[in-house]
Amino acid sequence: RLASLHSSTPAIQREGLGDFALTDRVAIVTGGNRGLGLEAALALSTAGSRVVYCLDLPEKPGEDWNAARQSLAKLDGAGRLEYVTNDVRDQKKLLQTVEEIATKEGRMDICVAAAGIAGAARPCLEYTEEELEEVYAVNLKGVFFSAQAAARQMHRFQTPGSIILLGSIAGSIALKHTPVLPYNTSKAAVIQMARVMACELAPNNIRVNSLSPGYIETPMTTATISARPEYKAIWSEQSVMNRLGKPHELRGIITWLASDASSFCTGSNIVVDGGYTAW
Ligand code: NDP
Image (cartoon, rainbow, N blue to C red; front, side, top):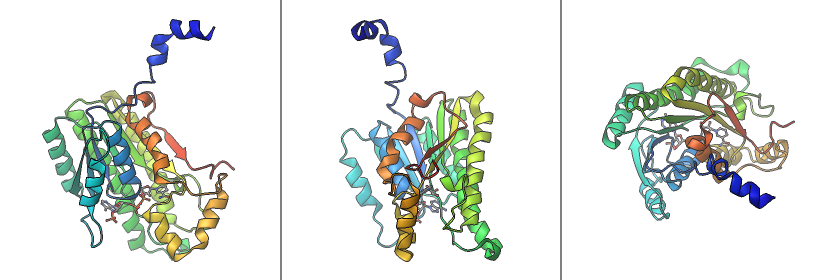
C-alpha cells in the first residue's frame, strides 16, 4: 500500500521538499561577524546562496574576520562570503550599501537582521533616557533600517524576498531574573514590525517573519554568564531541555525561513527556545 501511495503521489512528495535550496540567492546578514548573525551567514551560504554579505561594526582588536572567511571558504559548495562595515543605526549609509550590493549582484533575495545589543540590566525604575535610546537605536530602528534597505532592493529587482528579523522570547515574556526593560520592549516591537511589514510587502512577494530564540550560547550570553555565572543554571532550568541552545541549532529554521520551503509563512513569529516558554 505504501508503494502504491508513493507512486501515485510523486508530485505531492516533491512539492515543498526540494525547496530548501538557496541556489543563486543574494543575502545580507547584519551582525554577521559573530554569534547568531555568523550562524545565519553559514546557514545561507551552505544552502547554496551565491553570496552572503555580512554587515557589521568595524573590526575590533582581537577579531579576525578574514580568518572566519577563510574557514568558511573551505566548506564544500559554500557560497562567497563578504564582509562590509556598516552600522545599522546609520539609515542613509545602510540604504546606500544595500543598493550598491544589489546593483553589483543584480538582485536581493534574503535579509537576516541579527545585529542587536542586550543593553544594561537594571530595575525599570532606574533606566535613563540614554540607556533606552542606546538599545532602541540598534534593536528597533537598526532592525527596521536593515529590513527597509533590503525590501527596497527586492522591490527594485522584483525578486521574491524573505526578511528574517531577530526577535527574542524576551519580546513576548518578561524575564523574571533578568530586568532588561529596553531589550524586552525593543524585541516586542520587532515581532510587531514583522507583522506590519509582512502585510504591506505581501503584494510585492516579500515575506517578513520574526525569529525568537530562547537563550543561545553566543558572545552576547556568555558575556553575561562571565559576569554572573549563576545565570547559566537559572536560564537552563527554565528550559524543559535543561540547557541553553547552541547557535547551530538555529541553522535549520533560518534556512527554512529564507527558502521557498516556507513560501506560505509571513507575518509569523517563530519561537525556538528549548521549551523555555512552554510552561
Ligand atoms: P552577539 O552580541 O553575539 O552578536 C551581535 C552582533 O551584532 C555583533 O557582531 C555586533 O558587533 C553586531 N552589532 C551590534 N551593534 C551593531 C550595529 N550598531 N551595527 C551593526 N552591527 C552591530 O549577539 P547574538 O548573536 O547573541 O544575537 C544576535 C541577535 O539575536 C540579537 O538581535 C539578539 O538580541 C538576538 N537574540 C539572541 C539570543 C541569545 O541567546 N544569544 C536570544 C534571542 C535573541 P560587535 O561584535 O562589533 O559588537
